[in-house]
Amino acid sequence: MMEPSELAALARMLTAKILVVDDDPFIQGILQRYLRELDGDTVVVASDGLEALEILSKQKIIAVITDFSMPGADGIELLQRIRTGLMDIPRGLPVIMLTGFSDLGVVSRAIALDVDAFVLKPISKETLWTRLRQVLSTPRDLKSVEAYERIVANASAPAALLRRRQINRTGGRFVGIDEVPATAILAEDIMTPAGELLMNAGIQLNVKLIGYLRDLRNIGVDVGAIYIE
Image 1 (cartoon, rainbow, N blue to C red):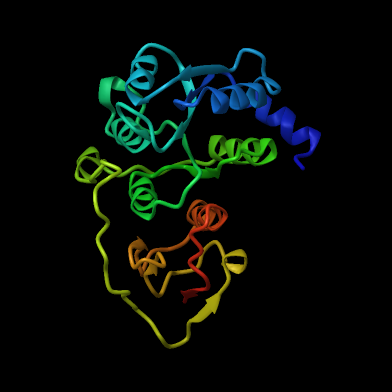
Image 2 (cartoon, rainbow, N blue to C red):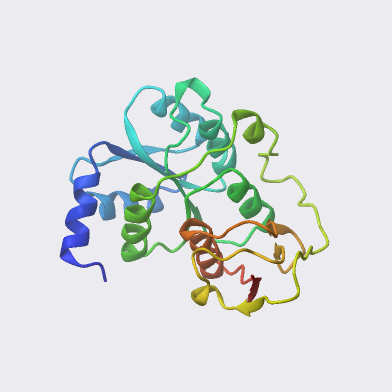
C-alpha cells in the first residue's frame, strides 16, 4: 500500500489533467474513479487515439494512460505521434500503456517508442497510483524524432524473430529481475519466449528498464533470469 505521504506527493504532482484513452466505457469509469480520489478535477477522457490527439493539441495534459487496442488510431500509433511531437504535443509526455494480453510485437514497439510503464487489466488502484507516481517523478531521455518515425507503429505488423546475441560469457552472472542492480550492464540480449528482441546486449540497465521487465512479467511476458556483467 502507498503511504499517506506518498499519496499526498502524488496528488501535488497533478497540476494538470491526466488523459485516459480507452474505447471501453467500463474501463474509463474505473480509471476516472481512481484518479478523482487523488484530485477531483484530474481526468479527461478520449475513446481512441485520434480523439486523444485533438485533446492533447488543445489542453494541458500531464500524463496519458492509454489502451493498446482501439478503433481509429490505436495506443501504439498515439504513442508514436506523441514521441515525434505531432501537433506540437510535448514529446516527453509520460505515457502508461494498459494491456489485458501479451501481444509481444506490440510490447516491443511500445518499448522502442519509450513508453513509460505497462499496467495490467483488470486495473488495480494501488498499481495505477504507484506507477503514475513513478513515471511523473522519473526523467526520460528521448531519441530523435527520426528514430521514432522509423519504428513500425501498426500493432498488427509482424514481429521480427532474431537470434540471441551475447557480448560476454566470462565474469558475468544470471540474476532474477528483482535482484538486478540498477547500474548493471546487460551481457546478453533479452528476448521474448517467441524469440523477439526486447533489449540489446551492451546497454546499461537503469530503474526505468528494470521497471519494464517487472511490468512485462506482470502481464505474462516472463523473460526469466537475465545475464549481466
